[in-house]
Image (cartoon, rainbow, N blue to C red; front, side):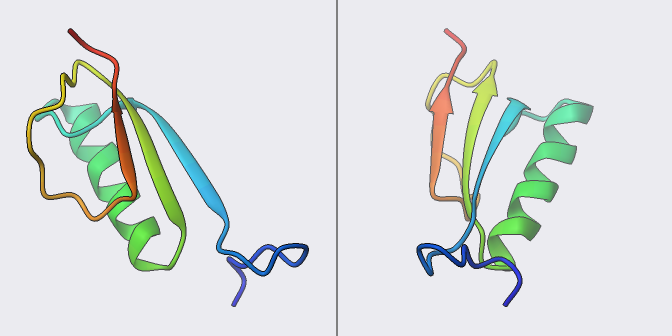
Length: 68
C-alpha cells in the first residue's frame, strides 16, 4: 500500500486543521475528505474550529475541539 510509512510499517498520519464536524461549507468538505482518507487506511486526526466536543459519527481516530 502507498499509505504505509516504510520506516515504521505503520499507516501514515494526517492532521486536518480547520472546520469539521459542523455543518458549514468548509466543515462538510473537511468531513468528507477525512472520512475518505480514513477509509483508505490513513490515521486521521482533526483539529476542528467551532467544535466543542459534542458526539459525532465520523470514522476518524481523534477529533480535537478548538471551539468553546
